[in-house]
Image (tube, rainbow, N blue to C red; front, side, top):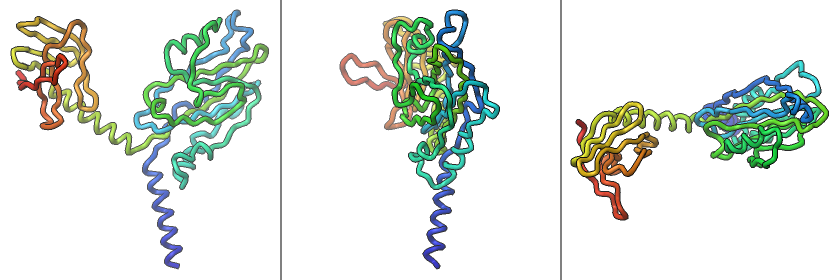
Length: 287
């Protein structure tokens, strides 16, 4: 009896932990797009569509579920959010979610691609389609009537992603229903938010005028800087902070002296950029 109670308790704790670790964030729900036959392109028809998707911070994987039909669907819901919520709050491992989602019924073949570059988006949208475009094969499908696709590669689980949809038929108009949702790791999101807060704190400390040796550097709120050196003159550019590192984008020439965060003392320091040698640390004084 004690063994059974112990196993039930472990099961409950496991479910609670999984439920606390991940959040489902809807990106697009109940959407349907009418795509014309490719033969109608030259008379103003639209057979292609690109959806820009802004993934939430902390995304560890995301899913899109689609189905095609000859006529508009009465019920446009594909139940992606409902299924994801049921799976994530259950005992399934995060890596097994994709296998547990259902595939909706579809009627007409379609192509759907995950595109990576603006150049590929331009080529995909081209009516002539002279140049072939590149796409992410693992996240794309061709000549499929419906499907549920999982994307878990870290490089494609952040920022803005582009999903391109095409009706390849030269004769039939297609109605394309799609739902998209992301699985967000609460732990990963907390780390990002904490890092963002630390970067913001550092940014506030840096804004203003600094003296590094004989050079004066002014860091502005709009992330531009002006460096004035008696020997090398005036330099301008942009700056930003990421993961407590200070990065510079120079408009012209070199930055004779700059600031950095010392990993040893955790203080803002000044340095002279090296010319093949190790950078020389210098004292940085805020004016």
